[in-house]
Amino acid sequence: MSDSPNRSVSRRSFLTSAGAAGALALAGCTEGPGTGTETGLSGSIRISGSSTVYPVAQAVTEQFRSQNSQVEFNLSRDGSGGGFSNLFCEGNSDFNNASREISSDEEEQCSDNDIEYHEINVATDALTVIVNNDNDFATDLTIDELRQIWRADGATTWQDVNSDWDDEEINRFGAADTSGTFDYFREAVIGEEADHTSDYEPTEQDNTILQGVQQDEYAIGYFGFSYYQSNQDAVTAVSVQTEEADSYVEPTLDNAKSGDYPLARPLFTYPKVSSLAEDHIAEFARFFVRQSANSDLIADQIGYVPKTEEEMQSELDALNEVISNA
Image 1 (cartoon, helix red, strand yellow):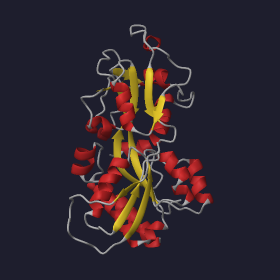
Image 2 (tube, one colour):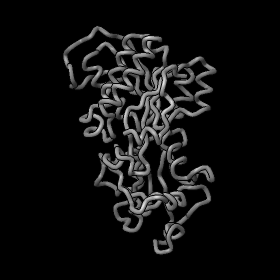
Image 3 (cartoon, rainbow, N blue to C red):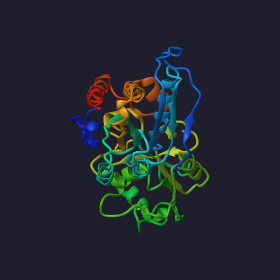
Image 4 (cartoon, rainbow, N blue to C red):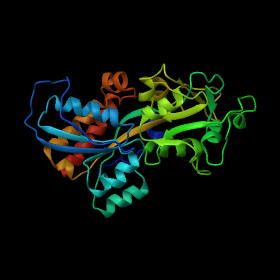
């Protein structure tokens, strides 16, 4: 477990304050700040975990390699839970990305294997529900309606949700149960009184969700806002209303930043403390934190809400304290 203070930041307080895929060995480099300036660092870094955080990690690793060509990365999309249970908490990766906080079971698994970790908030996501562009009746949904659609033993047809809607079967595409996106959606939408339906197409690949909804007029899906931002013409994003709110709120970076969008959530990476004793890993962790406040990268290129400079500095201070004791 982390030995730094303030690591147990809840989703609410954080927001108010502001398939497994094959491993990808990053052998090439891209242009980035400091290109051409070599630091002399060398070694390898294994990063596992969330497909939602993957585009952030991919962009940051590419920028880091533009300055540190002797550092090799092995980056994979295993899902938050898959990364924790199969790799990170077994001591087989240096970082695990996660689209939700580490669970108590994962904490116990890490502890059993003497794996200490440090939690870093890297961005905020607006988890986005999507429907087909030809769907003209379900573009605004309440949390209760989403719950009916996605809970086990819930609605089978759209008409089951609202008697004015089409009497057509709901076809669902969403995150696999190894995904932090699945865990967050289950907690934020379905709640403790029911389970997530098994009557859907589960995947760690956002493109599979996009294509499934794009090709089916009566389909619905969910994934991180970043992938929607890159494919806005292909599908329609659903505006969401909570039980407490009077209006439907669309998923945008501004609405996620303000906390008005009900499915906004923090994103994380977890470095292993023992790995931070290696210079190239410690420097990469610092670089990752600094890039979390890079608005051009996090917001414009990827599609998440970046950290403020103050939040970033707070994360960096906490990380440096852990590194000094690693």
